[in-house]
Length: 115
Length: 114
Image 1 (cartoon, rainbow over the protein chains, first blue to last red):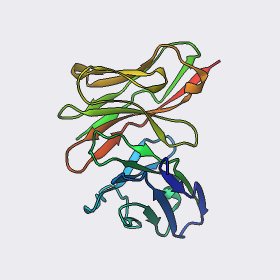
Image 2: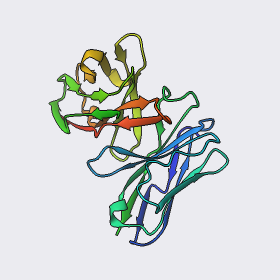
Image 3: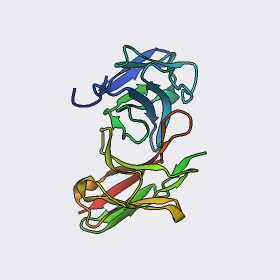
């Protein structure tokens, strides 16, 4: 596709339920990032995938959060037993394989509301 | 540790007025610096980037930014603001230590008065 695609665009879930958020990066981009954006906050780094290397999970806030990237393309962020503080916009971004000098291309995000 | 500070949470300017958004960074080497814009309900879009060379960089939508090493700053400017520039603006630094990470500031929300 032309850009980074995220689905769903909005998700409302009850506290305690599990949710899956999907990201389809730009074709050929080997780097993929997940960020969380809470109201009035900046972007909080969650996890980073680069090619076939082990992901950098250092930003995941708890063990309820996990992510995988299948076939080096589509990524899924899973939040188990959701809590109200998980409510935020979850942004996915991808970049070309030339490293940190490559700008990030963002999707429009998934707005998660936990009731 | 690397960090990015955007000291202004909100800025309001009149349409046609000039604009400067501040960004200060903390980084041990020459940083990769970026400015992104986020319109409501959208992801972030790259405005401009600085890697090396000329310290004044031009971006899209008439924006420019100046890298000042002595002040650890990378301020975003526009000579004449348009109502469509109302959005949130994020400064970011690319970190080459460890895995590649982009560290973002907390953003500056711009309001434009007609």
